[in-house]
Length: 93
Image (cartoon, rainbow, N blue to C red; front, side, top):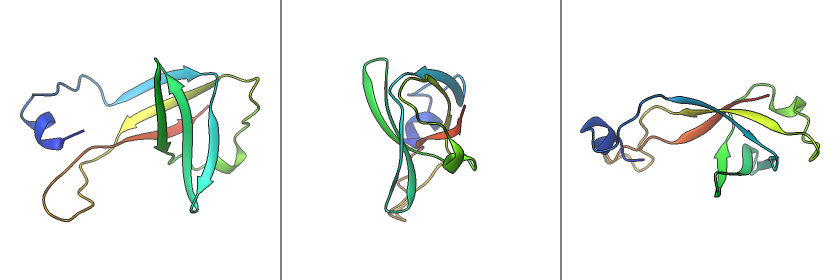
């Protein structure tokens, strides 16, 4: 999400944390980065995970998982003042 659009109120952010429940959660490491892959409201997601308990999570497919999704701080991976805010999984319950 474009930080400039958030800042100029083109995109209205009412809250920065959401609790969602999914039944198809897959937790994995990709290039030693923690990822959560799931579908929510018909949209497929592959988000980074910052939960410090990542390695202890139960990923049994019969369990429904609750995720705390957070909107991260503004970030510019290119270093050219082209800021974005990314969704992250802060906690897996």
